[in-house]
Length: 311
Image (cartoon, rainbow, N blue to C red; front, side, top):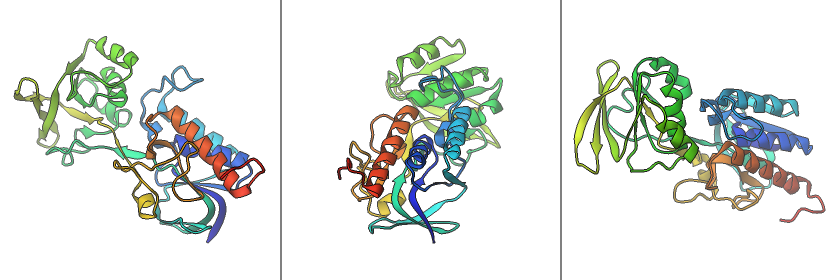
């Protein structure tokens, strides 16, 4: 069993920021990531609201964070999946698909995954016209007809990105107003090849080998019709990756987000959470970084017990 001061689960913005501050505080720090370091930041076509970068691709920003984190001496283990957690004792046990770790403190920064709309054809056409990642799959739809489903920041960012590639983009939102930032709404409305379908729900995704149409329903008019499309990008939010934490006794809210206090503490001593997996109301790269920093400094206080630390 390997021994560490601090084990961080997840290498997104929150986990990487926590890693930097953990290592700089003198803690022997390990970050575990079941995929590639960077988290969902990797999926952002363009980031225009992170201080210091007027605009930068999500991939580049995530890579810069990972390089910075490693430069402080943090060990980042990519493609290593956490299987179970035992957090109740003074020593925290983290079991992965490769080995078992013991830590004095744990930060859960496992993020979230894309939510589904749950309609017929969504799973069947995944990778054959249905996608949850604009930057990953957008280039496959150059000159084609695309439908983006959703009304938040992610949906509009995706629609703006794909509008530069596809011949036409339709945005289906089940309400009559977006919940996205005004700057994104304005930019979207200025795109000549974008049409907004208000009060519209997707009921089914159809096709043969590939997607070729969707059935949509207008809740205001009561009309149901088929819309010819080549691709559907589902951008309706995310679900927290909190199941393992919940099974280990970490408290979550009704939506599955880990409950934290202002210092990123969970209900278990020595266990912290940061980023999109928490019940913090704002899900942004900047807030994730701030939470990761706070969690790491709290973990340092818990482990080293400096004179100013208060439980």
